[in-house]
Structures are given as C-alpha cells and as structure tokens.
Image (cartoon, rainbow, N blue to C red; front, side):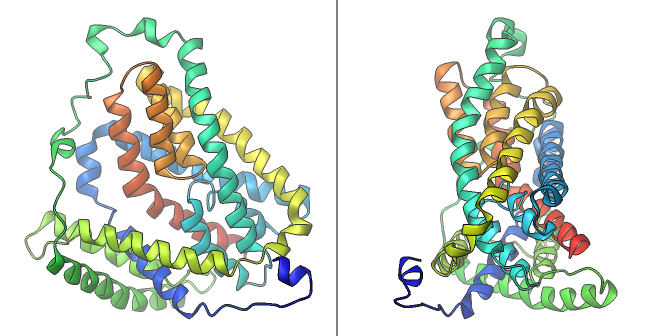
Length: 356
C-alpha cells in the first residue's frame, strides 16, 4: 500500500491457487452439514440455527436497504452484511472475489476490513450485552435447583458431548483428500447443471461441491456404504482456509477503501445496532429468557460479528463472572462450527444472484 501510494512500485500477486484452496475450504464446510448431529442436538440447537440464519438474512437486508442511502452498489454493500459479520475473514475472502468479477471494485477490501471490524466489535459487545440482560432480568436470582444451568433439555443426546476426541490418522488424511476431490469433481458438474438450469442465478463454482459434500456426509452418517473421515477433513478445512486467506490478504487493495470510508462506517454502525436489537429482542427471548439464553446471546454476538472462537471467548468471560452454562457451550459451538457457514454461504449466493 505504502509503495503504491508513493509511486515507487506496484506489486501484483499470482493468485492462481487461491480459487483451488477456496473450493477445498467450502467443500470441507459441506461435510459439516450433518442432519444426524442436528437431530441429536435437540430443539434448542434447531431453534438457535434458525435464529443464526435469521440474523444472516437481516444483516444482508440492512446492507442492501442502506446501499441507496450511502450511495454505493447493493453488491458492494453486501460486503458489510453477513459475508464479513457472520462469515468472518474466511467467507469474506472467498465471496468477495466473485463480487469483484462482476465489476464491483473494492469489494474484497471492504469485506476484509468489515470482518476485522466485526471481530473486534463482537469481542467487545458480547460480554456487556449478556451482563446487562442478567442484571436487568435478575436471572441469577431466578435460578432454581429445578432449572440449574448444568442440565440439558430432555431431547438433547449427551453422548454427542461425551464422545472422545478421535486421534488423527495419517491414512485417513489421504482418504479425506480423496473424499474432498470426489466432492469437488462431481460438484463441479453439478454447478454447471445448476447454472444452465438457472442462468439468471449467478452461482459461484463452490456451490456444487459444497452440496455434494453435504450429501456424502449424510450418506456416511446414515448408511454403511462408506465412512467419511470428518476429523481429518476438518483439518484440511483449516489448512485450506489459512492458505487461501493468506493469498487474499497479501493481494488486498487497501487503497480502494479511501473513497469508501464514510459509507462503510455508516453500514457497519447499522450492523452493530441491528445485532444489539436482534440479540436483546429475538435471540434472548427465543432461547428461553433465562441465564442460559443470556450466555448464548454473548456467544451469538461473538460469531454473529466475527467468528465462533470469539463467541466461545465471550461465553467464557460471562461464565467466569457468574456460573457455567453447559447448554450454551453445547448449542453455540454446534451451530457456529458445523452449520452456519453452509447456510450463510447459500443465503449470500441468493442475495448476490438477486442484486447482480
């Protein structure tokens, strides 16, 4: 950035492999979409998943509605919606290039900058919002032995929590890579078919592989045809994310943010207001308006504005001050780590197709 602005030198990076690692990442995300895990999680997990999807929709809706007010393209405004907020840096780095390909300059810089803003805001706001709810509604005083926070709902399968962490296996890494390649191969043809059937919808190349991966995961869960090495696939997901995110950050055109600073700030402030209202009046009430719900709110703020680890950190800070919530530490990681990325990317794709 400094070298370019000083007219000394302009560096252009070769991002040939960025798309390849991006597709690997989203294919791996598809393998997380297990209906069996969702069923074992019980109604609380299902309700929270719907709430998380609802927030994604609201984030995108606010972005496009305000785009006219701030005078920017709706597609560029979407890069301050659920792409960076719920999606974080990974989804931002993956989605933004498809927006740039449509001729919208600055999309990648806006998305990455917004994700960074969200990461900081989510960490700062989650704890105070939950603390305010606990004090305002006197939730600690309402706790009784019948409704202790360390108990689950009857419909939650606790074996999901007590399942031992599998040991990484070298052979399974090769198998995981082949599973991903198979999903990518079949999925690429599915993407072509979907594009031909729905030419008006601009589906990105990773949609097909992600859908095929989800189908393969659920076949693995519910039959004996094959067993998907999920743990190893998760590692591949992290590795591919780090690689393509590094490439995206290195090639980031920060100078494109100069003329977008004010519109972007307005849109990001709107996102903060939105999540504050959403958490207080929708998430908290839908999750039961109790102490567990307040802790879940802090977690939702963390991954609704940044990433799942942020949400977990928020919940830890709240629980350290008050008491541990086993329900919150079950519900938030399951939705944040396994399901929301798949739903969010699908929703973003629909918004892009509608406004392109």
